[in-house]
Image (tube, rainbow, N blue to C red; front, top):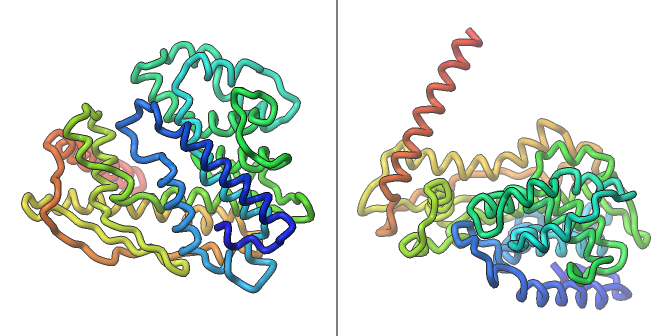
Length: 349
């Protein structure tokens, strides 16, 4: 995205900060992380998000309409948010996490809202190096990421190479990526400005949410890890969804998905449908939010953010098949969903 900076006065400053951030993250992200059962949250995850957002929304970067394309401040904020949105995943030490949340009272309302979401008691109860602790981090990583970014300007231990005045914007976008989209209705996400640039935080938050969902194909997992690590069945199912999604291709507000399923041990049709539907759901939920909840209706960019999702092709190859435990768990889920659907229909009738 750096090539889309237009103002030469700030371009060098922005690029220097971005490069410093990437170098810093090389020392932080998944260097010592025990979260091997999670999908890829490394720098390459962020790089794929960045690339796919550009491919999906060329008009927001290459267009000639100044009211539509992202200005330099927005591009900088979006890039930094893309690379920092999962940094909370790396705070795997209880002592450091306690230090991050040690101050319990802030005048900044957004920062206060973050510390209010996690208590000191919850952190202590999770216990470092336990599965409960890792799940706690995973569930709350967007809160941790946002608070880390907010405190990066005042606490050396959590320092990040963010330009002065931008941390608040970046933290808000990182927080929103894992929250219900209704959060964008909060006052923190109102249109604002900085250095004479209008900043649409709702739009930038929406772009990160979409970009994160777009990185949902085979490039996100190394399926062979399942042969050497004891990965919980719920995580394995999540991995299989990525693995059977061979590629997600984005171009001019169109998303095309190619699936590949095992030839040597054919999945039942209902299992193929399960993986196809779940992948599409992750990609369609954002456009559904955009249309149904009208969260960006006031923005001139609203019509440029709509996209379509289609299954381009189903392929079959000699690839890893799903294990029996995961297969049974999915079938149980399918039966449960059908039963729930029948109950709902009876109530409606």
